[in-house]
Length: 594
Image (tube, rainbow, N blue to C red):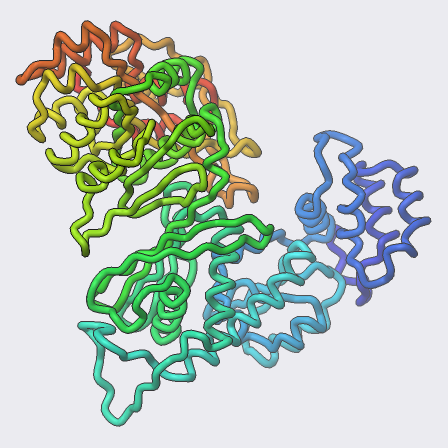
């Protein structure tokens, strides 16, 4: 229904309920009950919020929960308006704040969400309040297009966007930071006095707090603050993919970096060398999180990356990490052994640390002394005795392991085996009755053995200490709210055969594909899960480990003993509807046997 002749008025609860009854969303009885109780909600609460609070399920098909977002989309169609979900990561808050004052926006309950050279898109939850449209068109000399949006989002972001834009504007007006080496490419502006920012300035504090809040809300794993020639870029890594989310004035970006370095107990003045730091804070929901900071001097200034660590990963079980029943059995077989070396391999960002921390957390009983040497300590856990590599005092992995051996450990975790000395210390620890867990950077599990040989570890020591190797990758999981099952097309059959070659894995009759919805920010994916390849060092495998090891033969024997390659593990998750075919092909390395 689109009726421009309907007079100016705000929506009434009874009016919206009557429409819902007409459209079969709720029963007449339920609507009448709520109408009789409407005085309890007062006149200022938007009708959609009142109705969403009832947590009704739709009376007719499709049966679904009538959430505020569902109701907003329905109302948009009912009143002939376009619906728009407000995604804060896709809105230029500084641009929209220049369209109107916050007081004007609050007066009509409207929010600019997009500004172009010809048009301004403005969100509203009141389809029959239009007096502001003509007024803005006359003032701004641009076409105004109204869209329907969630009333709670409009109220929330109206305050946050305008406050943030105000903070950025006032902070930018205070000057630019030029302490130390801020930029190799910095322009010298004659006659202009540069001012030093205060990292504790209230506007900068507000911007940094807001940045963290939105990173937590969006499930970001990393925050990148990157300098460019004339401005700063903020990017979030969500489910393994980087998204550019904001552009901010260069001076504000420098002040933000200084503020974060100050909180991370880093040297704020030093901008010429990389630094590491750590911050512990809380999410808006009250959950503790740790942020690991890393700075890097670049051509345009100091770049800062914050990695967000969720302590909840320490209490996750192996199934939630992506382990199949068979994977769990093989992994627990290795980790249940009192002494030996277990290696986890994979590229940076493949989830190795999460796997090791989850394993150690389950092994760390009161009867066991768990010690770690890390570079740096990823997450602080009270159940572990954690030590950090300190290159400035020549405390490396090998020296750290040597010191840990005098601490009566039962289990030792070494962050990474990078050289022969560290490998020798790990082997010595295993030979003296300790369980050692560590990581290597190799493409698959069998390659870890050749990596140790390349470092100079004798084959007989590998045979006597290595319990097994697990290679892993992370794949994005399909959003459970919008994924769609489809029959396999010919090109997908070809891709499937390429994925599982040379193994004869059964071809599924259907696969699941990403679609995109509000829950997954229209990406089709939500979260990540591991795919694993576990090699257990059996007597037959040991006989194949020689100074010159033939990896194809070793890999073939491992397959015979039940090792499932990464691509097959990924293919099984495709068949189960956990991830997509394209995601596994992108992440899992090709088989050397295909």
